Figure 1 (cartoon, rainbow, N blue to C red):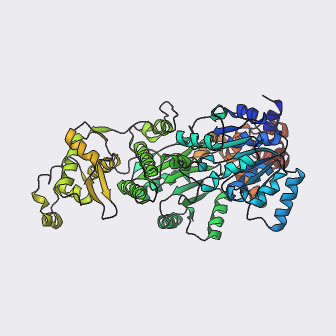
Figure 2 (cartoon, rainbow, N blue to C red; figure 1 turned 90 degrees about the horizontal axis):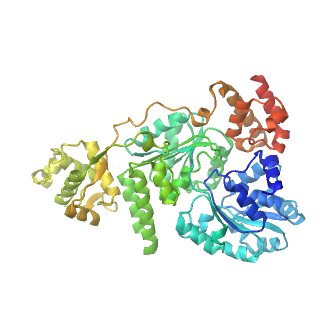
Figure 3 (cartoon, rainbow, N blue to C red; figure 1 turned 135 degrees about the vertical axis):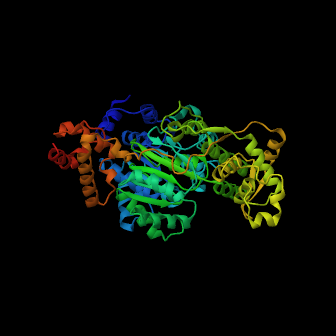
Length: 599
């Protein structure tokens, strides 16, 4: 390992040693080689291009998809003493002129730019005479047509790579299955021997998935564990986003909405609030997308089924980027499954793309319905593996299974006998032998399946039907009125009668035991909590004075370390992970004073 990268790691970032594959990647790129880097969110991808850009002669060019992400990264780098800037449409003419002057004078280590801006002819021409140390393409999965967040502008970046052919190129992502990885390597002409696959596991994240029962009650229970913490609640529709944010505000949460239908200024103001404050709940559609660089997001909840395992992995991956314990919850129901299926079938995508999307949805439903370790299923989708994790809901409380073969036969037979046009509630009523005018009017109180399901209650039958929909034994006509019909696989099941094990639904509102402490605070020792809160308050005070996010001053993890170590001098504080030279000079006295007051 070259000594200089280690010196930079300590002086700029405040860390004594590289983690995992970071050292090998840094050396590889410093030597002038290309690299594909797949590393989980929070694994330190940015160091893999930032340090080579500082070490190598010239300026590092970083392609990044979002203005907010670029602003966060530039702010954090400048706090650490690195010469960084972002080229974007928000710059005034004077700011743009100063930036280009710095570029051509060699005064920048790193320049961040969106792909659409970079591809403009005038920008490329002005970069032609600039010595580039490397080109790093962040969120590189956007380049793949098989990726979950394909962006056409990313596909055009090969022209940039060709234009600067002698410059080392890097593609970095946290989310790419095997077809996506192969396409990135092929499109950017990066050799397989230049690929660094660091795995997908995020051990600090707790995964939990529940069937929808009372979504608001379930979300309220989940959020009660995260008082005073930042998090994201994902919704499928703009309307649900607005309604959920308003409901949370009524409960006393500092909740904001974010979706593509909002006025741009309001949307950006809400995102800024989320970045700058420490206890904001952002209720958002997927328009609140990738590149959320806030490291202290302590929870992510989905109150509707996400689009794929890749989307779920990336969206939950916005929690706990600092490595501290973080929490996720996904709620789903049969309507979610049917709606996602409808989106696929009614899209204008070619058949090959639709087949791929069906496969992705099936994989997500397999994750939702598994009785085994969630993390094992999640990682196996990406070709990774782990032992049972002990940090997901199914490891903590393994679901009970029962032989649902007969129940499935009864449900499918009832759907058939009633004409394959009624919804779930009606089918359950027939199975339970409910007496009402509607059933009598259709004559369904006289069919063979009327009242044959009294061994299960209404709740259990709904759970059985939901699982049969997830298993593709039942189709749902969402374009009509939600009528159930027997799918091709369901007909085969009735014919062949294989054994079918199903999950026993959990008892109502008895899904969890005691409410856990807020995640970040759980990492703080009992005697250090008052100091930790005082350090957070000082950080917030400094951040507001500079109008920057608190986490660019110090991460929560660094505050946890400061509270535990209680340094009394600059020398001692320099030994705390996350405290680099620039931050020690700028903020050391203020934080040492807070620590002294709590001695």
